[in-house]
Length: 121
Image (tube, rainbow, N blue to C red; front, side, top):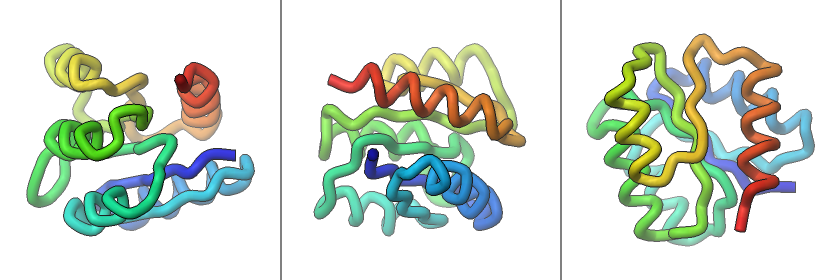
């Protein structure tokens, strides 16, 4: 299965996403701080990053740009509680493969993650 990184500044959100995807057989690494997530990606291959758009120090969009520089083939799903067309366009232009609105729907998340991972190069 896949190596998945989850970054959200809300611990409960990372725990929820982690539980959902671990039950599907994935190895999930959860983070609440941008720096820790970026440092992890520097030393570990990651198939998929699931990033909240609103974080503490940076935006999820900024983190996505950094992660894509480190691992260009990494897939990404963005999470947001504040969906806008502009944010969606920016995320997709930087390489995000999907977009989920919070609160996360278990079935929607599972389906989007499976679809993104199947489309992996």
